[in-house]
Length: 145
Image 1 (cartoon, one colour):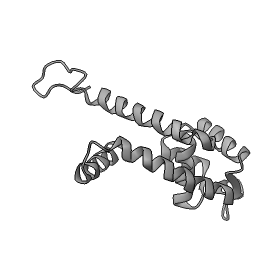
Image 2 (spheres, one colour; image 1 turned 90 degrees about the horizontal axis):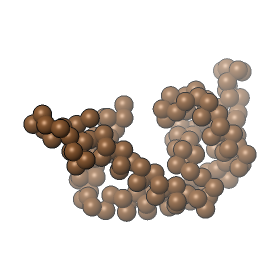
Image 3 (cartoon, rainbow, N blue to C red; image 1 turned 120 degrees about the horizontal axis):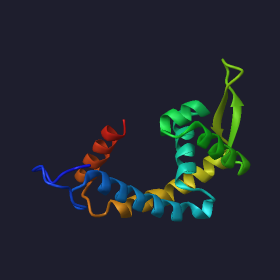
């Protein structure tokens, strides 16, 4: 919980946790609306993003990377697999582990969904200039680690 900077009680305009949660909730709702035509929600989209970026990850790696409970990862990957967007491939070095990999349809869907998500992100960041946006991304990255 933040304060106004002089040790007084926080307000809704000064509480960093509240402001971060409010901004995040607003962004997630907007992205979820934009992803609806693809049958995706933000959490599905982030799994696709991680799999695309890393070329295949175990469910444990996905959970660690995204900060998602392992049981939630299983449910998300199950949804994506049913939709034909990912497959679970054998790990080349560990036969007990499966890697979550985008299918061809998953790659295409991810690319299309990314275009839509980026438009929503641009709208959300419209009040910021390019420098402020870069600073915000860097600060969020530091906080999220």
